[in-house]
Image 1 (tube, rainbow, N blue to C red):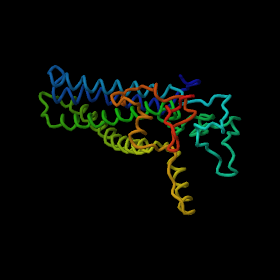
Image 2: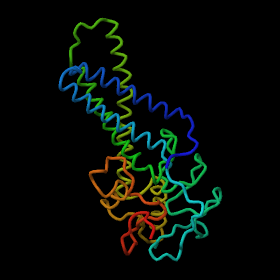
Image 3: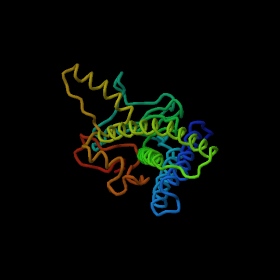
Image 4: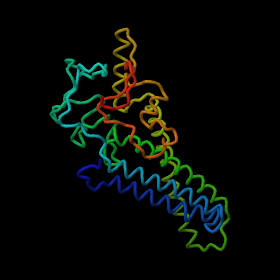
Length: 286
């Protein structure tokens, strides 16, 4: 489902410009200088990097335009459902979670986004770089985008360094100045971007292995502290094992983990937990 009311975003525009700059610099400067675009290695590297760039753009566009997950206006938690052993409640009072701003109950793992001004299913965080929330329906494509983006940045950085080992031939002063500018700008973009994307990817791999969102991680820190204070042991209720956690997020078929597929995610209104007696498909309605 597509988002409603998409508006111009400066950060999104900046991301698109950076992707375009890195692509053209890599293909028409680094690869061309190192291998030549008319050689077999040059064509192979250009094709590989173009495929990476296309996957980046495709997954990024889905993350931007796909609605992260809306709470149905008629949603009502069923506290008597024997197949839903976990019901999230408010920290104060113990009542079922209810959003005063949206005037409806919150499904498990849903949170209200102050920027989007509505509740989002399995909300992870609001990301200014996609001008959208990262939630139930677009979390996988966001994750896959980060994988491809980091890979593309490291690949481009390797090509940049490799192309510097080639001695320029018949290169006039004006062209040399132009190329130095391209190299300096590219290095200033690629080095910090590769580090940032690497850290971001590592963080979301860590979260995915435990089936947590960023919000749930911070809530879990507090819950763990309170549990230890009371002499108890806290366990994240949605952690059902590392591999199972990954299949819930990325899909049951390992071959499709890096593809922007999302048929496996379910409705986002209920999720498998460590307390389920009978395994059920994530988000599947009985």
